[in-house]
Length: 183
Image (cartoon, rainbow, N blue to C red):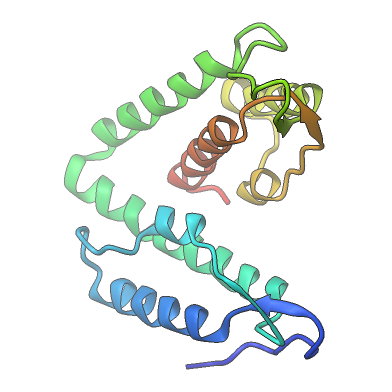
């Protein structure tokens, strides 16, 4: 298996053993081409690794994981169209996108549950601004890529939006983009 470059011994990176173990499992799942494999595009997207001094360079591993996620999503899309048929697949995709739209079309500052006033969440105005961009993509086809969604950064705010809830919607947006055959 191809190894990733290591960070300096004083810099933290991803634990090489954890990364290698995950990639072995992911490769086996990809090569098996089974719809019941434990590792799929969602698992790849949600995977995190422990940190270790001198571990793998984070950016290198993240880039590889993004490519793997896209490859798995494309295969999942092809398999779904093959099994469900184009019409059923697009209907399911539309239903999923509609759920996201309902959430994101809520009134500004009320799109997501709020974190406790003593807890830090995502800055409401940042999330609301990005929500408008996502709605533009879903309703009018405005430009938006899965990388745009993956790489969006929201500032912290005491009593801001609940991070888990926002992240779940962002995952659904990424799935919708990848399922549509776009990147």
